[in-house]
Picture (tube, rainbow, N blue to C red):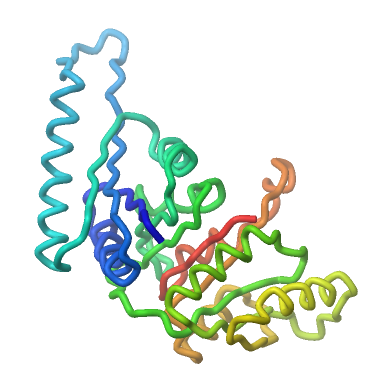
Amino acid sequence: MKNILVPTDFSEVSDSAADYAAELAKVTNAKLILYYVFTVPVPVADTPVIAVPMEDIEKENMKLLHAMDKRIKAKHGKIEIELRTQPGFVVDEIITFTKEHRVDMVVMGVTGAGKSPGMLGSNATSVMHHAASPVMVIPKGYKFKKPEVIALACDYKSILPDEAVNKFKSFVRLFNAKVLVLNVLKPLELATYEKAATEVNLENALADLEHSLYFPASENLKDEINSFAERHNAEIITMFPHHYSFLKGMVHHSATKEMAFLTHVPLLSIHE
């Protein structure tokens, strides 16, 4: 891992994510990119406004980023940090940045535990589904722990692309972590040929990693994933969000999106 992108809005939530990313960077010898996207005020008709030069806005933002850089280095030690700021829409600019630069991971903050996500937190779920890089969301106040156990939540509904699985395996190998694969079944749910084939495919893909398979039964998917992570002391939960057409998306609730606001540990999203 070489580059970790850390979008910030200078809130306590994004500071928590930056602290986690800093420790992750130290362990993996990666560079942090602190990134602040700001919105340019749009004048409303007949409303007098004082135009602030773009250069002045960027200069003030860089002051905030330099202060953040100083805080991180004072707390976490020597870390290579790059500072970036630009105007635009937060989600669009983050997605574009991951596509145009070699970003290995995006680390963002969410309030978590079912609380209000805040501006950056709500944007994190959109980034999770569209960024070219894996995205990790960090619950507010969560302290970095070198992951020894990583839970991988799968539904076995479709065979995962090799690229997504390889990204996951590369991350696991950074820490030589153990993988716990869980497929939460509804009570009395019957196995299907498609699910069995997908399970075999994933089992073969993970053959060179230390891993175990679990099939807990529960009516509440999100609660069971959280409980499973707590029971097995998992430091990270990983999910592969599915892509749906617009019409399907209107009626389908994303488990990954919901988990982002409910998880008690970092959630790593690697889109298919």
